[in-house]
Image 1 (cartoon, rainbow, N blue to C red):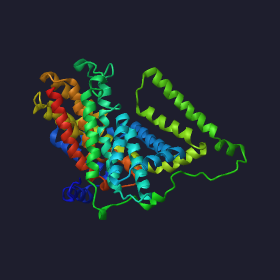
Image 2 (tube, one colour; image 1 turned 135 degrees about the vertical axis):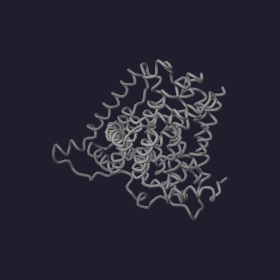
Image 3 (cartoon, rainbow, N blue to C red; image 1 turned 180 degrees about the vertical axis):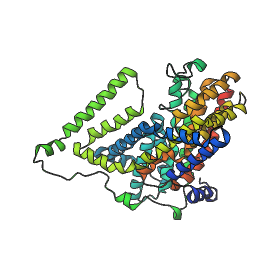
Image 4 (cartoon, rainbow, N blue to C red; image 1 turned 90 degrees about the vertical axis):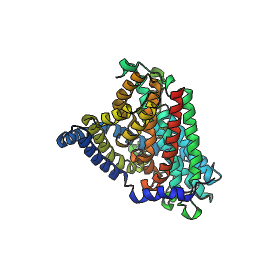
Length: 449
């Protein structure tokens, strides 16, 4: 079964013609936030500008973390053994439809484990599947393949790295007096959430092959990417000096990798199996060091990956500025208050979902969203006697949902895949509509239960 091209083409054409580069999108969202703050709040131009400027450095630590995520994962993916494994996985599909579905499922499973893993694994698998399909004469539309990987990311906030659920499960969190401690067994580890995640992921895996273009419209992977060396070769040298012997001593990089593995294991022993972005990062780096041929080889792998982090370093501070402006001016409170005021006990979860989806367009950060929207909707839930767990999940679902039309999280994915935003966003808009219907239906059923 295939979705008629006349239904998909308007979205792809609209995006290709009018959807700007992610950096330009960030600039436009900054200007829109400034105007809305002046219209909807008591902020003055000077105070709005001040809050924007004060917010610019607030995500620098996160920017550095995400840069290490991309560097470490890219380097790991280009080690010899991982390349052989990825080639084997990429060889699994026997048809283009199977390729799209495999990439979506792989990215989705990775996202449920850790959001960063889903983005990196999805992009890497998409690229490798495209390479293997090209070698075997299977024509796949590379933009749709990468869109399938991003589509799998739509379930990340239903998984183990769900920031909202982890926040309310932490003793001493800021809303403990209003809602108590809500263990993850009542949010992400419920049967309802697990079933909805499964339904969503299967729907994406089924939808992506249905969006395949006609044969004449297929755009295969760029030959330059196809011919690019799959592993980074370090020139073979005969170690003649102590320095050269150290640079090519595999035991040295392996020792450092083992030290990181030991640290991670000890952290799990002390705190339980709790994944943080730092743990994910050191896992990537540790595994890369263990699999690299030598310290020098790992340095070259990192150098090869470094060109992919530029857009992240440039754009993320501007989203931090938007976050600072929305919080300081009270704009995010105005938006959330309105949604809370027009809902009933039966529809509060849907209101929270839609509100979170809208705010995510301006503040694409799950933790940041819950910090500003959580208090408003928990207060409304207390007044209307709505289950707190449903509200937590509703905000989580809204946050992940509009990622399909917000380019913030496409940056690392596109950097690895080697594509432009407008090449995939037309397909993710379709995923946005389908998954939105699934999430709203699921929330209404949870509320009815």
